[in-house]
Amino acid sequence: MWDGMAADPEAGLLYIGTGNGSPWSRDNRSPGGGDNLYLSSILALDPADGALRWHYQTTPGDDWDYTATQPLMLLDLTIDGREREVIVQAPKNGFFYVIDRHTGELISAEAFADDLTWATHVDLETGRPVETPEARYGKTGAVWLSPSPSGAHNWPPMSWNPATGLVYLPARNNVSFFEKEEGFEYTAGVWNTGTVRGADAGPRPERPPLKGPSNLLLAWDPAENREAWRVPADGGHGGTLSTGGGLVFWGTGSRLVALDARTGRELWEAELDGRPGSPVTYSAGGRQYVVIGSGQSSGRVLPRMWAFALPEEPAR
Image (cartoon, rainbow, N blue to C red; front, side, top):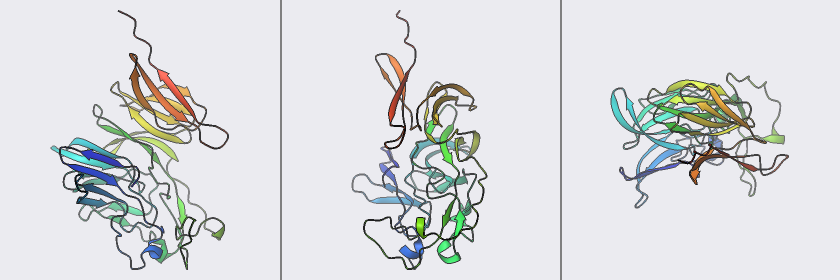
């Protein structure tokens, strides 16, 4: 694990999301098959001694680098007229999960990605994804699948507004070619995926077109587990910040924008000079600020921090 963590002091539980296995190809990693616990899972641990209290595996026997390390969020929701204390996650595999955070019971799981071809849905009785026939490329042959290993949602934080009842999710649509590397042998010091990559790749069928935008912001209703509204990104994008004033701040393309949290209507923008990260807000000296990083550590546009302040309140 390296990103998704949350804690519930009242429940006495620490939650972590775990990554995928290496090599990526299960047929190279685990020729006998199996789920490979506890890859790509949400684990509920006793923080006193680390004991496992429950687990939910989002991608059993992960073959695609569909990690479950993405941000975890604890919410109190009314679902079907019942108050539920839940944990939610939108991991790489393209499904939005709502889980009872005390027991690990799967309450719902719905696709948030427009492009999702590795599985058709999640079976609520078993909690398992229903994979498409071509998903296990190690057995059926090379294939284009969505999402790609970069995921339908990766590191950018999502945010929650209890007034609107919506989660603001920076989502992605992408596709990748998966092909098992035959005769795989571990090599120290290189990326051991167990898949054919780069210069070793031969002729491939034409890449299928994407159904949805490459990057977008989704306003997601976790109680109903459905989309409320969406805004396509200008290019790359980062995480989201929700405020008590009914705004969602989001970096899109080379801009920081403020959206109406209920409708997605753009209310304000500021031009940045590079790809945006994730905004944060804080107060100092009686003024509130919104700050965001942009650019990259290498390349033409160097990193820069941008700070924007609300007007000072007049003295009384």
